[in-house]
Image (tube, rainbow, N blue to C red; front, top):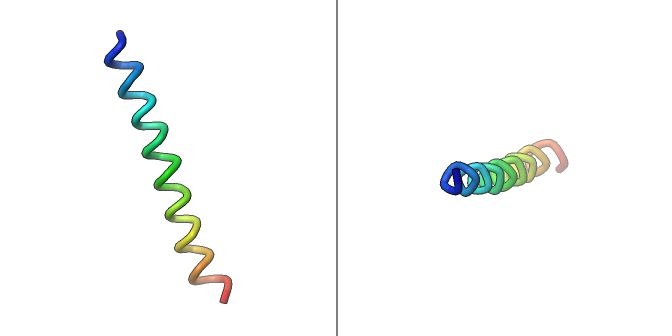
Length: 32
């Protein structure tokens, strides 16, 4: 159960970073 919780936390962090990165790229290409 602990392992599942850890994996979920890791996935949440990864998803958040991915969204931030994608948002920066989109902003870079559409806000010039």
